Image 1 (cartoon, rainbow, N blue to C red):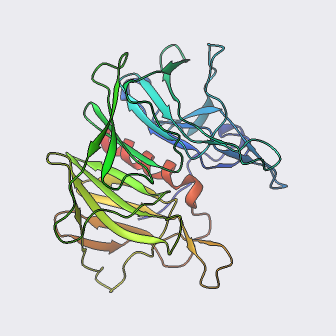
Image 2: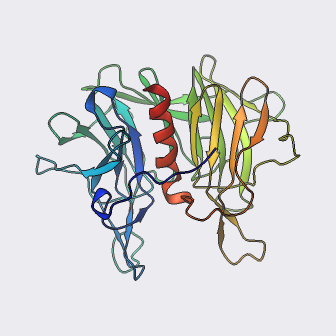
Amino acid sequence: MELQEVAKSGSARPDVPRSGACCSELPESLGDDLLMFGGYTEDQSLNREATNEAWVFSLAQDRWAQVACNAPDAPRVRLACGAVLVGNEVWVMGGWDPGHKRDGGSILQDIWALDLTTKSWRLVEPQGEKLPAISRFACARIGTRVFLHTHRSTDSILVLDVADPKSPVLSTVPVQASSQDGVPPSRGLQSLTAVGDQLYLYGGAPQKGPMLGDLWVLHTSCMQWELLHPKPAANGWTPHARCSHGAAALNGRIYFLAGSYYKDDGSGLQPTAELFAYDISSNQWHLLGDMEIVTGCPMGGIAQLLFLSAHCLSNA
């Protein structure tokens, strides 16, 4: 498997690199494949500014294009938010507005929908419960249900019913613990990947303690967690614990790329370019990328984009 840069010209991409953005696949009929929203923009001097820009990417045309929104109302700047496709809209949920001058910013609790035809935003106000202030969470849609796994998701999980997109219903749904292993411990910056009616939760960073590298599955038919114990890859390797990685399902496997983990000396985060696949039927890891950082390989901030591209290709 080879990683390739597909949008090479300077005018074909966002003019400032960014991290912490969220992204979503797009309907095939639209002509573009995925949408990226928000994040930190970082110039050559490493000056950071949060943004509320939206960009779409076309795999067929190898180009980025900024979305010119028609409505005056739009989500405020944010990063570490979540995005899912609901019909002909991309819904952006929660996130963190870092504010200015290190004032701590604001953890957000709003939901916005971008109409992909009119290019206009609308504020979504769910029935039932109000969205709590959340960031660094993971979300995935199965049918008409959007699941949000946050640091509070221990004995329950947030479920947004979007059967009626104009009147969605948010509720906290209890989950059952595994008889032997309990429930996934609290975490953020994890991945949540939908395969059929199951949700696969991997990795993440707890508020205290070591980085996580566990793999769980939530059986949504009975809302019960199960801790998986995958067999190592043929060479004995297993993925390094990590957060802020990319994940996508393709042909019976879930692929995990990049992310970061704590350095052994405690001096900060170490990016990784590991590329592993988890084979669902055989319950086994497969190492697909070198254990060293690959030159030009996308790291944690953009890994999700890469794998949503792979997901879109698989559905084309």
